[in-house]
Image (cartoon, rainbow, N blue to C red; front, side):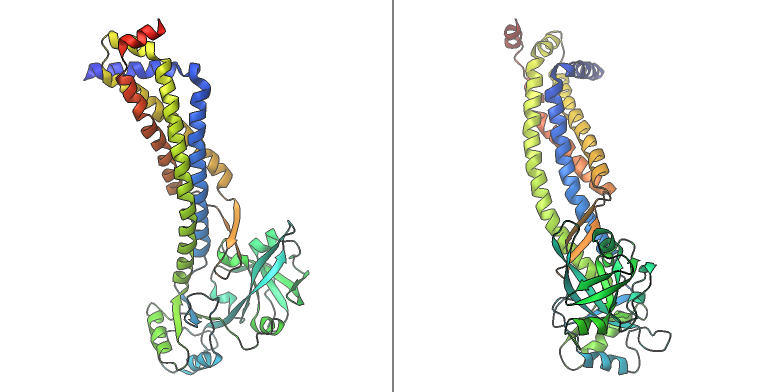
Length: 399
């Protein structure tokens, strides 16, 4: 066994020493692997970033009440009678109380508005009308500049991602949303969550400006302890009128993230795998060229008593090392290029949602293993060819 190991190490050294003779074709193999890794890393980082943005928006202490048999705010309708009935209930409602003794809740509506971006293209953003208690129901939301909108006034506070991406949203400026002008009262941050892709305003001001008087799509409430959601659902089931559904805010955004993340992966993995197949074919071609180039060396060593296994191991290790180098290059390059990169997609309310790509350790591991697999698989057949090389034929061919 020690003899075989020594022979293997010697042949590996001979193989690696001959790489300068095959520099360009070896580099092409490593770069093809790097490209595969970079593409997969980009898609997975996009999925992780979208998931993180929505996960940061959801809180298990907050519930969202929806109507109309939908699981999203779009298409939901919560009757005003239901809100009055909930507020008038005595006993345990599952909803916490605010400092004034009333229920900690916010009536809300989301209106899509078209805004012209810095590139001249129109994009659809979410204008969310809410009660004055609404911002307080979002624990991570902080006014970063200016102030909160005044009740009843046509004033807005703008999420940080919108303020950074679109011109005309500086504090103190006026911007036209719909048919009326709104004063930008302030900017807010929310820990990089999906809320930063929204514009907030007073509920009644939004209803008046967009002719939606009395309409409410959702009701956000602060839950009263761990059993609050279950108690709230019991209370809602006893109300007359259209059925209402209470869902944890964390679960609501997690479901939205899962749908979009699955869609990103559905596109990303097939593209990466197709590229990996092409890279594997390139690796096979590269290593077959390597075996052909070193036919005399392999034959000479075999005639000197080297076994088939060292010839197999040396060729296979060369392929794995080249793919590992390409995978490392792809991981480093994609981390520098993608981590923190700003992207956007259509959110749950069919409006633009901005997020950052996040290159996490599991993304790096997954993409790196795929790149390594290219060399493991692509180098196997050439390694077997090296082990079975006809010695006399190889020597005659070079003679």
